[in-house]
Image (cartoon, rainbow, N blue to C red):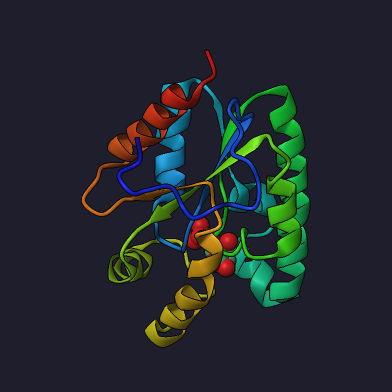
Length: 190
Ligand code: S3P
């Protein structure tokens, strides 16, 4: 079971047999690493939405922000989410969303289709900042601490609309994946 109580009354039901487990959270919260590990232990496919967007566009994420702007990136992100969720109908998958992917209402509506389980990876802000600074990949929205912190505070109530929350500080990706998997097992209807 997740080690925090379920989030308050989501406006959408939690799927008992999800086709997609969607990891939600801020930049540097470990969505891709945990997602990869979770998919491997479930024997499910894994997709990183940023990678889907970059492949479809033939450009890196920083390049897209620079050349097309954030709004165009968000449109691409919604398209990629729709395509990926359609794929989940054929093959169940774990999906790591980008840090802003759960913010547009339209994206959340797509994720409330009764087939996706959303899991918020709740990691301490300072550690996420450190991770982003040390990462090889550039993150266009992680250039200074003040705006990073502001954005996190704005988004936190939105991340909290997820079905589940896992506090991830001090846990290995494998352990976090285990928490999610335990929850899945315990919630399967008999
Ligand atoms: C973003 C997070 C990034 C990427 C883009 C925008 C955001 O993904 O989608 O740079 O708005 O928080 P990660 O959360 O994987 O870093």
